[in-house]
Length: 466
Image (cartoon, rainbow, N blue to C red; front, side):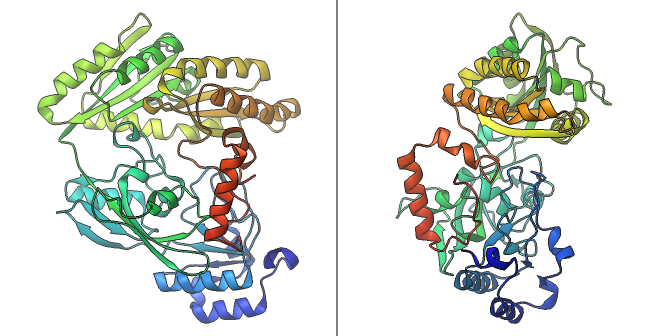
């Protein structure tokens, strides 16, 4: 049994050692202070018994060794923007918040890389990179506040992933600490390398269950000279999804391809600066980037691909300000769902692009069958659709149907050759569904790997595995 489970308090010897390792202002023991570190954007909450705020790799090593020795659960935290309960300390113990490990260690423009600590926000990375003519590809909706550490933990992505891929493909190397305090240095500064096992990609997306990342080497890309944003409105879901397939089957890869269904359109349709046909049932938000001289041809390729009998209107943003406004509204969609219902189950499923039409048709049928409103939007270019089941717990029958409806959604996704999570992770919210996708043999090997890295199961216990 974990030490903090037995009496809901941490061992005195552990606390005394912790106090000698950290100054008072970076060790929180008061329950009121700790409470704020016990939740994430899943709206689940579980208060830890202590919160540590390290500022160096050496402090992380020291704290981790103490937790391992005393069998104290250790949960890593960035800014708590995750939606699956991944940073919620469900077994209490110690939360290690990486918010003060927020240095940019090195910007190496010749080799197009940046070395950072895990507490640096995604936006800070983008700002510093942009000052030098570069960017880091991952662009989640919470970029202004989420941390690189969180992006690494969940393999974050965002709209640009359709062209530039996810965090895994844009991280060159890591420095990390195992449960027993060993320091791992994996990866390289080059974009090619097959010396030894690929530990970097293994740790990215492991949700803090294998090791604690204290430094990351990020791959930078040159900022495109120009970009254009195009919107295409359709009278039917089928028309929009056929256009998605057509876009992705032609040589020009868009830098973003976002989809909104009728319910999502309703949330933005009458906002300032937005003008869409009243009978729009689906909307595509498409971005192309590259050299300015390529933009006319790029827009022509896209506008040709999106045309079908269901197309109502196609528009090109007139300037950067208008394009920025469209993207700001798209990124505000998720919190805006609270306007429809107080509760939601937010899933980020992925299916092969060719199966998007079948997915959306199936979701519509499930919404009608269970009486649960479902709002769909997301990164259609790689089949990553954010499926939002909206319900009200005050409506007893509706609340009871929410989980069965979610199970049916997952079954549909898997029947279509998809996966349960594209970028939000498993955490606590999906761990009891993971066996639907991963067979028992594979799952047992994952557990063996977890045991090798973390034999005492102190790193983010109660996550990922059912």
